Amino acid sequence: MLARRGVEVHQCDRGGDVTFHGPGQLVAYPIFDLRGFPSDGASRKTLGAIEYVRRLEEVLIRSCADFGIAAKRIPGLTGVWTITAPEPALAESATQLDGRGRPSLHGSLAQVSVPGSSEHRVGAEAKIAALGVHISRGVTSHGVALNVNTDLSFFNLIVPCGITSKPVTSMQKELNRPVPTQEVAHSLSRNFGTVFGSQILWLDSLDALLGTNLGVPMKAPKNLRRIHSEDDPAWA
Image (tube, rainbow, N blue to C red; front, side, top):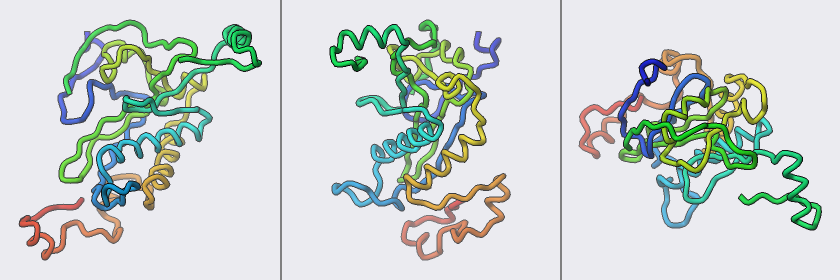
């Protein structure tokens, strides 16, 4: 069934449960040395894993807000979520129940299953972006996937991040129109720079990155390599 839909399954060292990457998503894999970022807390000097994930969520929340989509965190879960607006009939009923004229809302093993439909219920918390990272010696890999114009039917093939009780959504679904991926990419880049306090340079290719002198050496200085007993580490 997966082969017929052109889906491949890859095992990797990404944190979290099974996820989906495909057309219509904006996938960002930041490679950071967390030891170069100061922590906001008093318990440690540099950025830790949990604080790093919270900052990634903040980048995504701000990027969604740039397009008029209200998004948030959910305690105990990783990712970014949105709540859809209630239908007028439901809002009217909620207003009557509220009594004050205000609507109220109450609201790393791969697995393949068909849990049902990815369509989300009115008022339901829906996941618009997934996170999964790997950190080794303070250096990050993997990252985030924001559903921009994603075909959400692919999520019916898995239990996204192991969560069966909440649906998935996309920017296109929330706004009822396609969203230019390039515009979202620029928004995400700007918010990365703001949240992590770093300068962001837009480059068109890896060759442009490797051929540009950004003031960062491709290899660690010789004295630093001797201290860490490393023969020839690359910083690219």
